[in-house]
Length: 162
Ligand code: PNS
Image 1: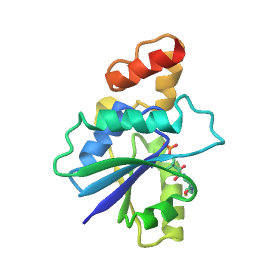
Image 2: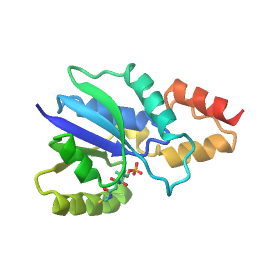
Image 3: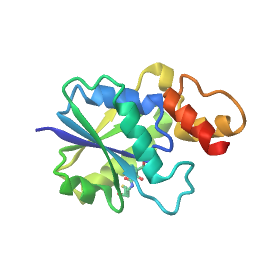
């Protein structure tokens, strides 16, 4: 049983995240999409909202035979991954600029738990500039975000700002 953790803030989930999950499904039997509970970060969606949206949109993607589930976690990610008996952490890398931060995290996580491998995956080029931060920024400034996030995310963002 190959189980991976795909950790992140997912505030909100983007089409880039979903692309990575679909690619991860080709490698793993189970992927746990793990939403970080981070009280220090001001979020657009609450943890419950993010998990709920993820649960809904994950029903719509091609998961092959992979079991994909959503959980939230707090504290050290490697600790959480160990509790879930995961073999790997999946992270998406869009550009070289992501690499430095991701490499630091991967090496720190390796130091903390050497048996846990980090697997970097590249999204489709069309998502190489898509980030949750920019999606929120352009949405809040009135621009359309169609094609960058699933329609449900845009709908929930509109409802939230009514
Ligand atoms: O989507 P993000 O915000 O880039 O995800 C970052 C995340 C959740 C992967 C990272 O902040 C994390 O793992 N946080 C949990 C706390 C932890 O383990 N910190 C040490 C990382 S080396």
